[in-house]
Every structure is written in structure tokens, then in C-alpha cells.
Amino acid sequence: MSRPMKERFVEIPPLYADFKPGGVPGSRLRKLPLGLDEYEALRLVDYLGLEHREAAVEMEISRPTFTRLLEKARNKLSRFLVEGRHLIIGGGQVHFRDNMIKCQDCGHMFKTNMGGPLPEELTSCPSCGSSKLVDLAGGFGHGQCCRKHEEQRGSEEK
Image 1 (cartoon, rainbow, N blue to C red):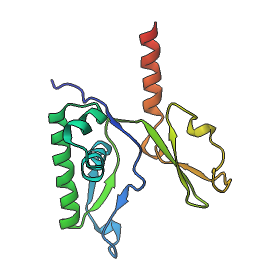
Image 2: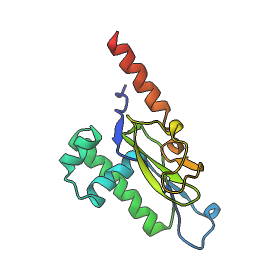
Image 3: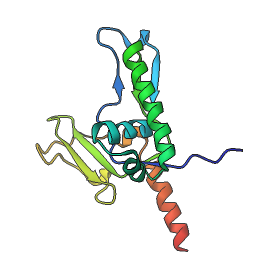
Image 4: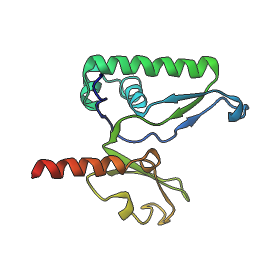
């Protein structure tokens, strides 16, 4: 029996999670899922320019595991570009360190610390004052993972 997959840490949720070739209805394209951990591997190395060792530390996984994850993500990204697939980012055993909140009225985006004010406590956009806010981490199921972490911390303190 294999070991359960270790939870990977993702700094912030992706701003966009659905990509497809222009001019083709999504219903006609084959879906290609990219896990949140795969997205984070691409962001850390290809976007931020970190070394594999540094990126593995950020995600709290081993360097060999990180390298395999990055290879898998790059393969999927290549398939998206070459085959014209419908790329959807989501899923996986992840925990967000920080969150992004987006105002639906003015488009302003701001980062919140998961250790600070929870998204439920945020009531208005700091830019325009609108109450139409979207919790990006919540769209990826965030909240369930934090409750699990709180339960684990509570049992460790006893």
C-alpha cells in the first residue's frame, strides 16, 4: 500500500483557472486538468526563477518530488499549447498560505494573510468600498483545509 500524498503548500490561489484556445467552444475541447501543486511548481521556477531546491522548501516537499511535479506540469502545459486543450487549474492536496480577494465592481485585487482577517470578516473593497468581493481561495475549496489544520493543532496541544 502506498503512502498517503503529503499536503503541498501554495502561496496564493491562481488569479485565473480556466484557459482555452480562442474561437473554439469549450464544449468541443478535451479538458486537461492542472493541479494546484503543479501550478505552484511552474509559478515558483518558471515565473519567479527559483532553483528547484528553493521551490521545494517553499512547498514543503522533497527536491526529487518537486522535480517530478514540475516535469508533469510542464508536460501538461506543452500539451495545452500543442494540442489546443481546455486547461483547468484546480484540485490536489494543497494548503494556501495567503489568499487573494477580488472586487467584482472595480477589479481591485488584494492579498490577505490566512493568519490574519478571514475572508468572512472582510466586508468591503479597500479601493471602492463595494461589498461585491470574491474569495479566490474559497473557489478552490479553501476553508476545509484550515479547519483540518485547526483540528490537528488542537489535538497536538492536548
